[in-house]
Length: 136
Image 1 (cartoon, rainbow, N blue to C red):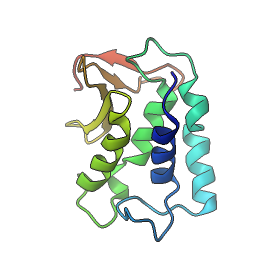
Image 2 (image 1 turned 180 degrees about the horizontal axis):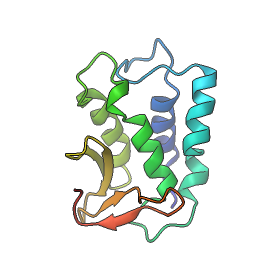
Image 3 (image 1 turned 120 degrees about the vertical axis):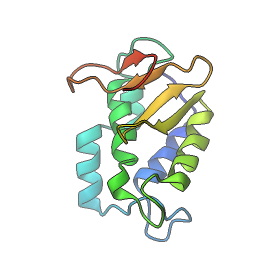
Image 4 (image 1 turned 30 degrees about the vertical axis):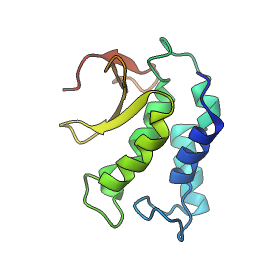
């Protein structure tokens, strides 16, 4: 998957937010927390190059990045539904034809805007995102 540099930069800035960042609704991560975050999720550009089903389904590692980034337990200066964080993320994802949303399970998922196809993390962390019509 090849995405625009500014999309990747915008998402990276949400992950590696500085304490004085203009969007305080993302958690500040010290260098050790950033290291742990990327150990859990991998790096952005590299993970977008991982194998994936098709151009409408991001790689599983990218889904994990978004799920970690948007964890409702990490809400800062906003409700747990994280409306400001979700808006900022969707501004970036929209450039690529995707959007993020919270499902009933309170997990953040990504869907392709044109097809409404949802990419979710498979139950096996070693499998790619699975495409599905709806999240249960």
